[in-house]
Image 1 (cartoon, rainbow, N blue to C red):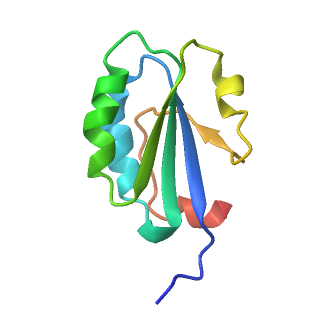
Image 2: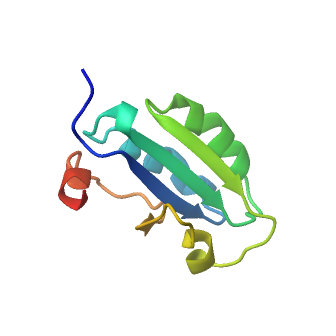
Amino acid sequence: MMSSEPAVDIVTVTYDSAPHLAAYVEGVSALDYPPERLRLVVVDNASNDDTRRRLSELLPQLPFAAELVESERNAGFGAACDRPDCAMCVRPRPTRSRRRWWHRLV
């Protein structure tokens, strides 16, 4: 049975965020939202640390679709969010996410 929830893309912008990614991915993977209706798009702003390598390890573990967009230069948070499919961008910082927070936004 197909979910009645709308399809949602979470767009996340990273820059030298390697230390925070495991906790972020863990929190996002625990969202109480139909996985077939959810996609994570991570825009890396030309990180200098292990962010891209860590993302390539972590994103395939998610229970929903994920895409890594690798910028050649750091254009800033706003420019990275300037996507036609983006209504809100989030930063990957360790937080205690509530599993149902996404339902309130959609």
